[in-house]
Image (cartoon, rainbow, N blue to C red):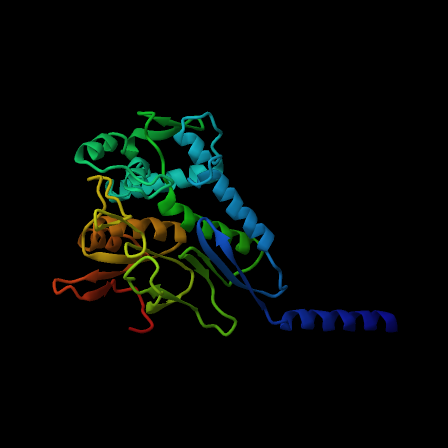
Length: 331
């Protein structure tokens, strides 16, 4: 009887000890997908998921990374026989839905134009109106589909590009993995494509910064505003760091598939908050191509989606605009 009471007492002590254990903050950082990543989470068991997260990056690279020659998407673009995996199919379906939603301002078949302007492994072509017109024949999301587990193109010269959703999708994959492990308070940042769940142990939300437009690609980074984030994805798309220069003129990396040319409107960056990082990623790209006035109509029609724009007004001054539900901590 004494032994049994001692055992029960020991079990109660262990239970109370485990319940009172403070969650440990884990920060994992590194380089992936041509950029940085930072994964922060709180775990009562103090587990380090570096190996598993590295595996997620590797799986995404082997599927949809245009810079990995053996990836599924590169093989599809070369018209080789290849089995489509779940990651490729997910990105394809999301990109197609974004294309339909935007009326073609977002188009996953824009790759030939991206290459011609020099935003890929190529250095770019000599741009002429005739070249743009010829490449636009290969850009139309309605002319490519998945059929019986294979990509079917109406023109074999069509090439796919999921760069406007793949990093946000990666953040969501990592977030889903953490939740499968019982981690419900985390911030996943894959090259600026952010997914947040829960908050900090003291109940405060995650706080992230939106970058101030830069003068050049290598300018020192500065924060424009800070945003409280909880259970949302947040992605910024901008033109001030991603551009090419041709004949003394700077061209944005945001290519308008409907014209074949980089956008030239007054929006410098668009930040979108959505239920996940994948859709925040796609919508931020759509905002940058459509411009503020047209994209606002789309943003306002979507439940749970908010946006923040930084643009240049008629006086050539920086100005900002946020939708009603985009809560900024400071100005």
